[in-house]
Image (cartoon, rainbow, N blue to C red):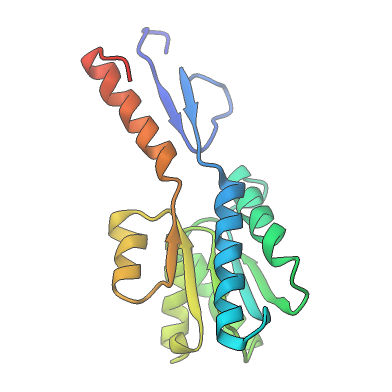
Length: 185
């Protein structure tokens, strides 16, 4: 920044705003989309909006975790027969999610949906369920939709869906490439 080089901060803000541009996904909207997917899925499965959910959250206090949770429950919270049977924080990390999901599986005999606030945590939850032989009892939902994670897991049938903030990523890439070529986006 001091050298006059533009910098773009994607998704997470930094303590001292030493960036030229800040781009982030609408995490609340992504959470609402995930919530609607869950309501629709459970309604198809049971003929009514009812079921049991495990939520694996990102880092406490992080804007992404707060809004992905809030948006999800903006939708799911309207359906009193959909219950959260276990919530755990895994700090965005797959190994922590595996441990937290193992705890959930030990505590909860019935789980319909696992909502991971990012793809690595959803995958860690899947691995825990697979270790227990329970992965077919529930669906797994992730967020990020990256080609080598979320998209791959959906194609392989591991995830039911992975949501992405693709427009923010496209805008960021467009800005980077435009800056390199001195072409206005």
